[in-house]
Length: 130
Image (cartoon, rainbow, N blue to C red; front, side):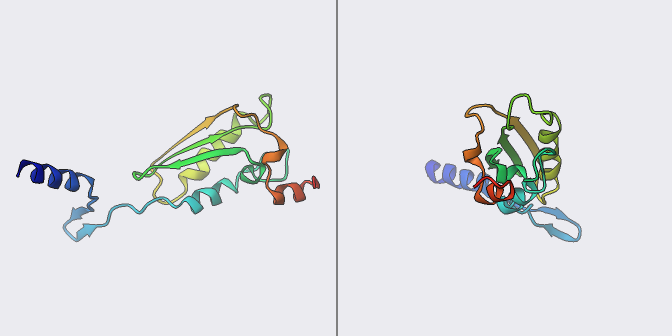
């Protein structure tokens, strides 16, 4: 019987409930859409290159937690990139605009180093690199 009680408690602990107000239940926050996050990443451009950072292949990973926290691993075209300070903050600001996002962490990584092979076909066409 104790095992059944433990199982019930753990099931209740993983269930998401909405908050209650005098007007009724407020549903729990909706999950953050991966498509919405990627869409916002596509609004950030390297000022020296007429292609967004997602199509350039500068985004290495996007992790979305159930509680709305988003972590992005990105790189820059070179370690001496003049936009090294502004691009990560632009990424953070753009993702914060996605409904349901509660926190954003952007980490700049250098391994593996970026190369032109990470660019999408659309980015290569835009830059006449085919």
